[in-house]
Amino acid sequence: MADVRRQLRSGTVVLGGMGLLAAALTACSSDPDKRCVDRDSYRAGKGYQVVSDKNCTSTKSTVDAGYYYGGNKRSGWVKGGSFTKSGGGSGGSSSGGHSVHRGGFGGGHGSSGG
Image (cartoon, rainbow, N blue to C red; front, side, top):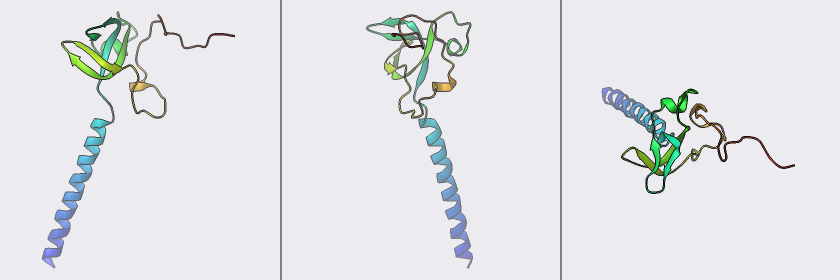
C-alpha cells in the first residue's frame, strides 16, 4: 500500500511540473519578438532603427515610432519583419494599442473616395 501512495505522489509532482512547464512555454511563445522602431529611419541595407520602448508608449515621442514584429536585429537595426503582429486572430490592437502614429503616407484611418 505504501508503494501505491509513493507512486501517486510522484505522478502528481510530474504532472504538476509538466503543467507549469507548458504554461511557461505558452506565455513565452505567444508574443513574437517585438521592437520599437523609428518608422522614418528605413534604410535599404539595414531596415529600421530600433529605439527605446518609451517612444512606442508615450504620446510625447520625438520620433514616429511603432512596434515591429519579428525580423533580424543587427547593430541597433532590424529588418525582415512586419509592423503587423502575425497569428493574432481577433484583429485587435497589438500590444495594448500603444503605438504612436503621426500621419504621413498610409497614416490615415478613414476611407476616401465617394
